[in-house]
Image 1: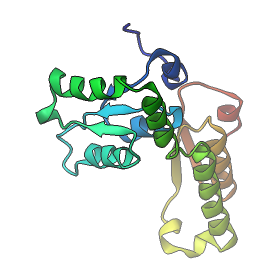
Image 2: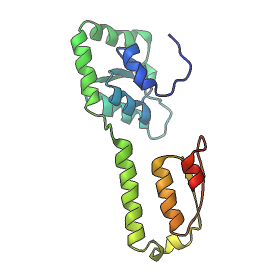
Image 3: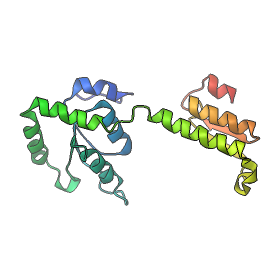
Length: 177
């Protein structure tokens, strides 16, 4: 089955597949962990710092993913892994659970809270006492309509900065700031 682009595909993927064959970008491996599906990862080989290989190793260390580097990838190589795993459905489910242990379901909240903590520290400890901060006049926020970015933009606006922003759509948050 080939589908057009689907927002939140990971919510549907668990019903569609027993295993995933994919690249290993940061978002992809995070989402694989969140949905708890085992995978065969084929890291993109042309990043200077080999970031996808490092991401793949992180997931593979859980025991729930296999890595085939692109230069070694073939249908035969993938089939060997699939044949081993298809013999034992219980093992396949266990691999998915191993991957799921890496998930951080509330990562968005943790990141947002960390940003707010930094801003709170800067505002209560005299942000304008930091020479570099006095040279900055205008701040642009990408995703300003989201609850986290909008809140941060509002704090910075109240600190005297000029605020600009962009988002995929207008909302009550974008109108407010």
